[in-house]
Length: 200
Picture (tube, rainbow, N blue to C red):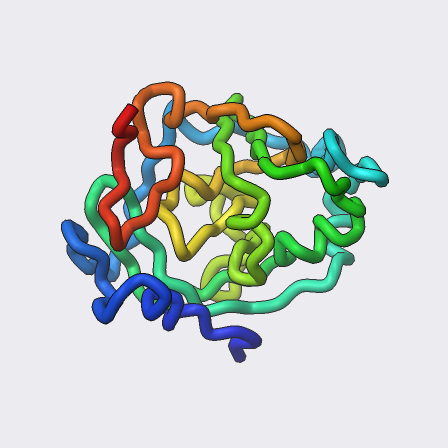
């Protein structure tokens, strides 16, 4: 059962579901900056900080008690492959943002992960129901190599904008660049415009 079918998101950007320069695959390749980190369910914590009225902290059990939905999404990797009809279950970004009561001067978001990875997005880009903190993949707990226990998915963007092993969301008034953005990757990462690398 799927609560939301997000596979038509491409219609916002053009007529082709497969972005230019991408090849479709049924596989789900594993890519990360430095391998898969370990985690302890008893010590795991998800926090929300920065420009919010309510800073939040959730244990693993508390996060799992949040309202969740299942979505069918397409997944686009900046390295050139796309996986259609991928089923993720998790908590939408707007659910977290509403509980944190984001302040009016917040315009940017920085995601932090267990392995030290960071990635940045404009707040407006995050405030879509399709941006999901994913706990499950294809009805099963999210495998560690794919970002489990918790990762962000951003079907409207290249997947490096969706941090694996995410543990903190920081709301910011001023932008900060993330790990790959500091190393020349695009800040905007629109697959249909082939925004793979920075033009600055």
